[in-house]
Length: 191
Image 1 (tube, rainbow, N blue to C red):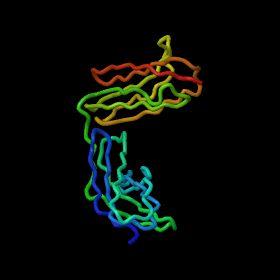
Image 2: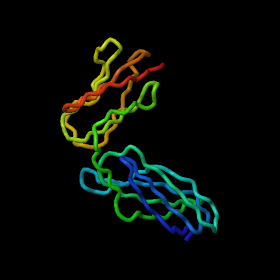
Image 3: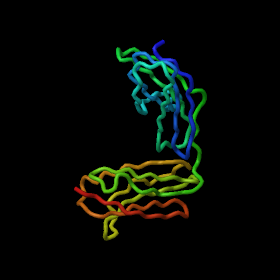
Image 4: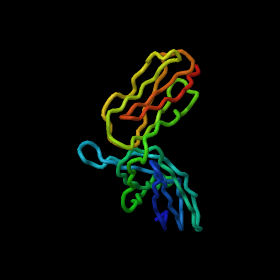
């Protein structure tokens, strides 16, 4: 075996999963593709690439690695490492158990990222209770320019993508409304 894995663990912090693993021996190790699985609509496991961490190549000492999978929705996730050799060979290492992202303690609208943006930005929010949710974008005069969310949502962590391609540069506002919660934040489109 070109790589001997000595540990592979996970820890959850809010809606992020941190993976840590160690190797005791590496030969010809290009790196590790981190893969995450959630269940698709048919209940089948669907493995997707979450990231990549370079390996040490050739080493007979312990090497420690970590990767943080951020901004996940509430749910259960499985992880595996696809260790890839320089010659293209690979081997899988499964994480024992699942990482569980729970329900947030409070409803919150977060600052968009990136900000300023051109033309696309991400708006993250969390809901502590299920309910009807609206997320709207307004211009400086208070006129609605886009409705991003207008539907019932389960409690959990979410991210909406806002594309300002058709808008002029300037300051805009986005407002999250959910039950008795209303919060507005400012975003800046720079072209």
